[in-house]
Amino acid sequence: MNRNDFLTTMIGAPLVAGFNQFTNSLPEQGPEMPVLFVGHGSPMNGIETNEFSQYWKKLADEIPVPKAVLVISAHWLSRGTYITAMESPKTIHDFGGFPQALFDVQYPAKGSPELAKETAALVHSTVVGLDHDWGLDHGTWSVVRQMYPQANIPVLQLSIDYTKDGQYHYDLAKELASLRRKGVLILGSGNMVHNLRMIALPPSRDFNAAFGHDWAIHMNDTFKKLIMNGDHAPLIAYDRLGPEARLAIPTPEHYLPLLYTLGLQGKRDAISFFNDKAVAGSLTMTSVKIANA
Image (cartoon, rainbow, N blue to C red):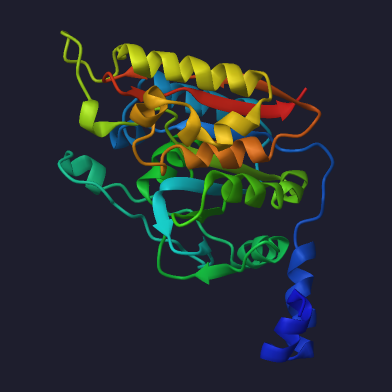
């Protein structure tokens, strides 16, 4: 039974017709939006003015203003794949031990139930559930509020199914490609190298100072080389890249958003890196911009 037959059986033909109209809610507009992978690092980057947040602001000025932002954040893990589908997503403070100013942040961007339904309809490899409970976690708002502080652009999140492997996530991303032509900025938010158990600060005790363990710098350079060469297969099978890769990616949630970004790379796209820096020994802020050359 195909998707339309299933929907017809479950909810009736008239509603199916209305549902399919959502897939035309954003007309294709020509040039594709860039795709980003952003190393989000500490939640404090969401409220601090530093080299990372300043570049996020600069980036927003350089790229076209999106009609909406769809974020794949390291901090929304689920069994199955879901998309936020509420009118007004809440701001989630999913961390502890930080100053009260961080907990006071509210990012009142609207959602888009229509775009959520349209996005879910694009995906045929799995059923994408419409979520009304999550919101915007700090993997999303810490970056997006620096890029778009007026909160005047709809923001949605797509969850990460933690039961699936890298190939699943990479392939799912490809099904979202038409959103780029409709003015949607797709943003993966995580960190290429992310091992909180091996954090170490330099003598200056400055968390954002350039400082990385040898293995972290080596793996970050390896990831960058593979990305520049368009050699995605080893990046998808990251667990086969050896012991240093297992140190860099002890758990996959901060790495998998990168695969969504790479899955959306097209033949006309060029690669560039920004915020390319190791911090706290075992984190890298290295970020990727994929855009039509």
